Length: 101
Image 1 (cartoon, rainbow, N blue to C red):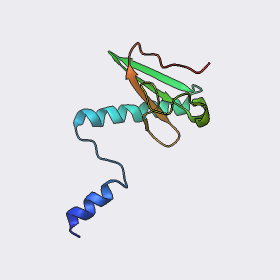
Image 2: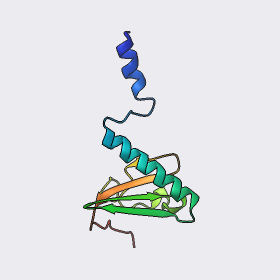
Image 3: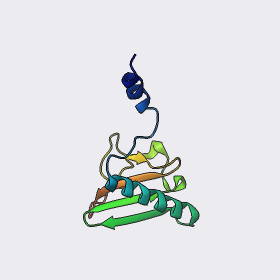
């Protein structure tokens, strides 16, 4: 195995390095907002910029996994773990996901 092969194999095990300055700044902003949310009494922090929305939630704000009405991911569902115990939702402004009744 070459060094390149070992590097490619290890790439999936750790965090992926940002590809651009803009991506680095966005991830830094998300980290700062996650810290702000953690220190506050809030359970959710929602940010809108133009047509893009971002929602950070504490684990106690998320419904239990078995109560989801949909098997697949859609806009408005958590798409990645920002940091352990936090989720991020990304969607378009004006879109409201269906809520179970």
